[in-house]
Image 1 (cartoon, rainbow, N blue to C red):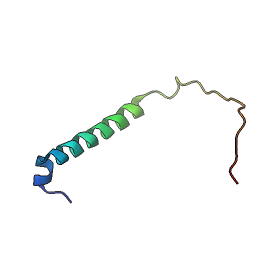
Image 2: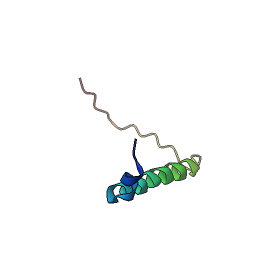
Image 3: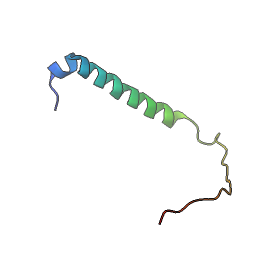
Image 4: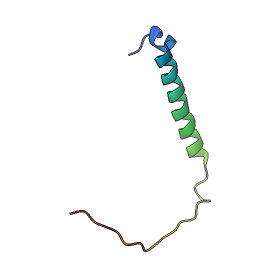
Length: 50
């Protein structure tokens, strides 16, 4: 794992900010009501890869 010296470094601080941003994004994405999003069904042609 990581020791305290890592989190005192500039790279460690950037890692902590990145982790906090990912957690905040997950929390806010989970709080967004899904019922407000209209479901659009479009008959667009699709391409299948063989």
